Image (cartoon, rainbow, N blue to C red):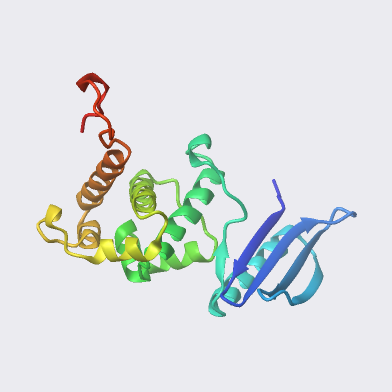
Length: 222
């Protein structure tokens, strides 16, 4: 079924929106608008589309053009992934946005993104252009491990991406001086090790002994 599509891009200086929507006469129209972050508005354009398929072709061209201009394709809204059917396109779209956001926050370059997901760099480029993750269990397992690592780092470092980036790249005695990112890049087991360690640290952070003395059965065991 043909459905309306809304895409948002942003850069350091500007934003851009494209909406493929039905008009009052049953046809399709592509509405584009942009502006500057300092408040200056740009032009709004309405372009009739002969067919829905033609509208999709125009959106795909816009995706490539905006990315070549330095824009980042952004999610149109936040969805709780746990409430979605994991087999649904909506779930995969949400997970694609989430894992790309994690890569941006952790400053992971394209080549390493491909290694972490065990895909070709061209596949990462397709995600950046709006393609959703395939319904592939081995791929989704890697994606969810990366998202869990990103979530734990966010909790441990109070949402500070710089400190999270530094932790990922600093030798860690818990990993025999290996850098966490190196472990993650090395294998699926490395991803699991880093996730387990970080989630243990998060659990410990919320399970500190109370400041006053309490009976042992009220204390939080590590």
